[in-house]
Length: 188
Image (cartoon, rainbow, N blue to C red; front, side, top):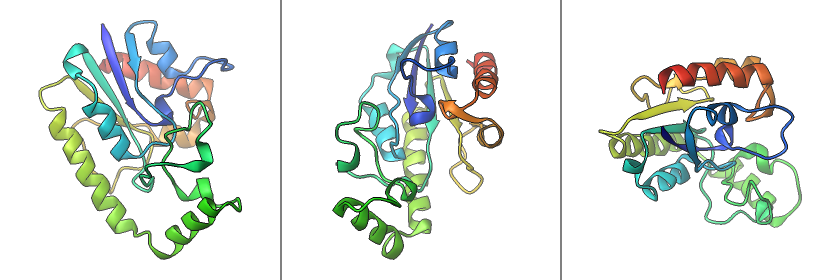
């Protein structure tokens, strides 16, 4: 069965990990095409989806991200990074450092960023994703608190699992990854 995965770093497969992440575990059962990228905003997740013919896959899994991750066309902090080259910005990424970009971003988050606006934009993008995926076999997931965000039908929210099993592979411990794998295997 062919599975396409879209989303942020929670779904990225990296080489040379100390244990298998949930995506690697699922690859034992599915032919996976993974489009996930570290640090991408919901906007870039939408663009990942729109750049792919979903009819080529039996199932689609979307890993939705934080509403506070803000789209940038170019992020000079990670231009040479294998995993973060398309990374958008979030306050925790730019809190430290004295580059002009870090300073500009901190000023943006302090003086311009508006959480209500970010949530509204995020929800609009999620609604667009939902419409785009209608009629296709899609599983929506997140690892963030989505209680005040767009509610996809039957979305699987791993936020509590994340809080209890933070680790180094897909942001989870070995046990956390295995729990995600087991649950996703049932619904896919």
